[in-house]
Picture 1 (cartoon, rainbow over the protein chains, first blue to last red):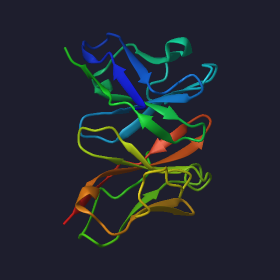
Picture 2 (picture 1 turned 90 degrees about the horizontal axis):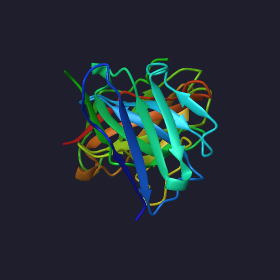
Picture 3 (picture 1 turned 180 degrees about the vertical axis):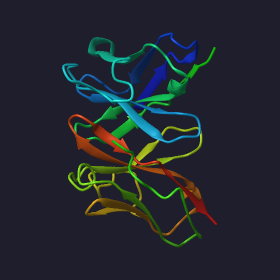
Picture 4 (picture 1 turned 60 degrees about the horizontal axis):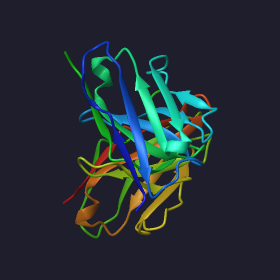
Length: 118
Length: 111
């Protein structure tokens, strides 16, 4: 069964950092473009980051630019998202998803919740 | 850029059809044939329903259909079923800098 599993979320203090991971089973990520999409509690979906299959192209939403770093390790079949200088408004479920260069997403992970609070 | 505009809620009775609109601009919906739609149940990850305006992934019933005219895309669900009650999101490619924009989501209630 093809499955993405996001992990690494939790309670983090404002100004802190968190590193999210996304692993895959039954699915090779090495040839896939990937994205991170977040959803604040009770709110809609917000795309935040995209990385090409080789990792050479990275795109970030303006709302998070400068604080997020997306990376991948194709040998480990994994995707990562580092979020620095966390703010209360970063509180959200973060989903990883297989992404297409023309902007649609299939094979979503189950999401990992990041809560920013003192 | 602003999110795409969707109605906050729509409703219909079992067996009826409903249409959810998604309005963007000439920089996103109107400029690219890369509109996708997602279904999300509470506490679950979204699921791809439609991509490239009107294409369905395998396994998605043909009761779900997509279309686009100008800056507005639409998702039509025919033969409504109780299980269709969920949140629906549209998404459009918006160029290599912005990448994509999502709509604010529409809650579908099956009466």
